[in-house]
Structures are given as C-alpha cells and as structure tokens.
Image (cartoon, rainbow, N blue to C red):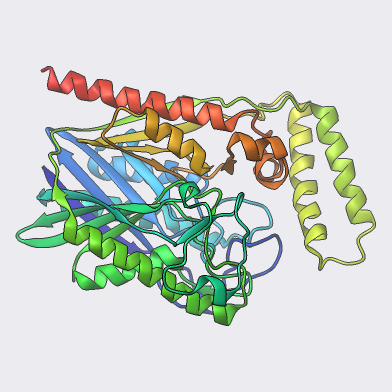
Length: 451
C-alpha cells in the first residue's frame, strides 16, 4: 500500500465577502485568523487508487468538482470517479457554493480555486510511498448539541465549563474516528472524522478561518512537522457546537477552547490507532433522482407573490425577513421561468463511495441529519462506515422525517434557495441510496477476495 498527501493554500485575499449566517449581511473579511487549505490524501493498493481532498470552504458548486477532476485526470490519468472533493463547511470562508445572497462571489478567487484544489490531489498522488494506515475511534463528547431537539444558543457561563454535555448526546457524535498514516517511523498524515456544524463564530466575525475543525487540524499538524491532516465532515445538518451565535469576542475565545478539545480527541486517536489491513481500495458512484414535492408552476407563482408582497411593504433593506425575501424572489423567478419552459427542477444527485479495506466513506452533497447517518451505519456491511456531507457539491439539507414534517427553513426553504424543488422524503431516499452504495463497495470487495 502507498499513501501520499498534498496541501495547498486556498486562503482568499482580505476583503472578500464571507459566506454563512444569513443573506446580504456583507461580511467583508478584515483579516486572516487562520489560513484555509485544500488537503488531499491518495491511497494506492493492488493497482487501484483513490484521492480525497478536504477543503476549508463552506462548500462547492458542481463546477468546482468537474474542473478539479478534469485537471487531476489530465495530469495523472486517474479517472474523475476516483476523486472526491469534500468541504468542511466553515462559515468564515468565501462563497464557493453558488447561493445567491450568501456573500458576493469573488470572480478571480473562484477562477483560480479549482486548479489549486487539483494541485493538492496531484501532489498527494506524486508523493505516495509505502506506508501503514492505523485507525481508532475515540471519545469526543460535549462538542455539539442537536439544534433540532435541544435549546440552541446557550449562555457562555453554562456551556463553556469542563465536562458540559448536551441533554440528548445520542443525537450528536460522541466519538471521532482517526486514521494515521506512517512511513519511515513517522506520521506523514492523518484524517479525523466528526459531524458538527462549524459555526462557533457568528455573523459579526469578519476574520477568515476554518472554524473549530480547521483550527484543530492546524494544531495537530503542528505536532507532526511535515504531516498533512484532513478533517472529514460527518452528519452535521442538525448539530451545532455548544457555543453558537454569540458576540465576536466571546465567539473567538470559545473557538479556541472547542478547537482545543477537538484537537485533544484527535491526538488521543493518533496515539491509540491500531494498524488496519488495506487489501483493496475501490471507488463507486451512484446518480439518483430524489423524490420531490409536487410543486407546479402555480405553487411557485403563489410563493413568489407572497415574497413580493413582503418586499412591497418592507420599510427598508435592513431586516432579515426583507433580505430573505429578496433571495426567494430571485430564485423563484428563475425556477418559475424554468418550470414554464419545461425544464427539470429535480436534478440528479451524485453519491460517491470509497472503500479502504474495512472502511467505507459514504458521501453525499447534503447537510445530513444525525438520524439518517445512524440508520445508514446500522444497515451498512462495511466494518467502519463513515457518512460524509458536502461531497462534490452542496445541495442543502437532508432532514430527518420529524424535521421534514414540520417543514420550514431546512426542509422547504433551503432547496428553493438552490433552485430545486423541496425533497419529499430525503430521509428515506438518502438512507436507501447510501446503503446501496455501501453494498456496491462490498460486492467489489467480495469480487476482489475471490480472485
């Protein structure tokens, strides 16, 4: 087995608008607190190779993945289906998601971005050498709380105390998975996997950084000079950090505390990781059309009229309600025109899976809810199934059925912001597709073992 790593700086210039926390809040960056990186890992065994790159970005549009894959294929011959472009979902990076209103996209930055991400992948392939891979699953408690079922926005003197735990820990990740790559007696790279929305900071924050997961990865990399660390974002759609949406001064202090706690868990994983046999690697894709709510042109026109009326009575542009109405008016006008032209408002979605011996990376472009992840893990055939969000593009939330029944922002409104019809059963559809993807990878493993 050969393993290689690559790392490329993707920090935007100071002054670009930052993405997240709300529409049209013009969060122009004022400084770089921590640099943003594209970090890649390549694994090669038995003539098969896969590459995953984790980017300190809110997410990516599909165009980024397509350009990255094309560049990697041109440089190395590796098929695009074996390249996964993953994002951590920091809310303190530039708008690379293509959401209208969530930070003005910076054209020069976006034009250069795919080549930089591709270089991290190409460098990882070029640096691959004989190495061993170890794995550990270690405690990682009290980082987050489920915002759908627990009270969010708790005061700092309540949550920033040693030993704090949420009321419903079973609806959060309470462990993290850590992979350690070693060659020549030293750590050359590591991967950590955990699910929690990276929003320790707030809309007042105008510093560029990767939030708790990026800060923590930087800390652990410093322990191992020359090593590259990837953070893989898990099911975070309904999980916030325990400290969220507070003033900037408090947020930045909490950021270092929570990042330090997560870094400690990763260090524990690196220390306890045990070697695993990677007898084969494989990549699989599935392209699925998820069921959508049967909203026709009349429904879209009704919603458009509702939001236009909101704007007609708005006193000025400062309120959150007004700014959100502008987002929906823009996207609904586009969707209505597309619907009347007979265009498809239910695009296919890519699900991508990597098999690394006993590990299955089961990735989708959703912000996946915890219950969905739990059901996939329970049904998966892989010994270590890891469900990833924000892979290859960003398409909004995959809510569980309880949240979907309530409707509202995550279930109904966010898809419209992307220009899609809301999902009819994202819960059931995503569980089915990811379990099937795991099955595809398992069949591949059986076929290889039978040779």
